[in-house]
Length: 109
Image 1 (cartoon, rainbow, N blue to C red):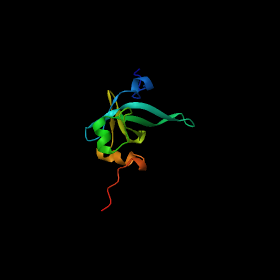
Image 2: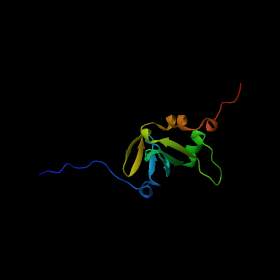
Image 3: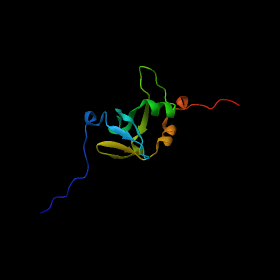
Image 4: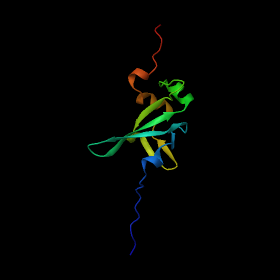
């Protein structure tokens, strides 16, 4: 008798932290810093991504000399997880993920 192969992959938070995160357009944006869990359903709700310096500057994410910029990405935006985490949106689409106070505003004319 053939047993059905389980295609679900279980992964611990320790295994996931630090994995490279790649946008849909192939740009490496950073690494997983934390997981946020909904305590009612015990499901992972979103991932905190620690952004690379250049990516944080490009997106306008808040960062300082001592603190890297980061964004929270909903798990619905994750396409796959293997050696890296691949997102379903390109780098430019991540601007929509930033909180309103972090989105750089154009100067008044």
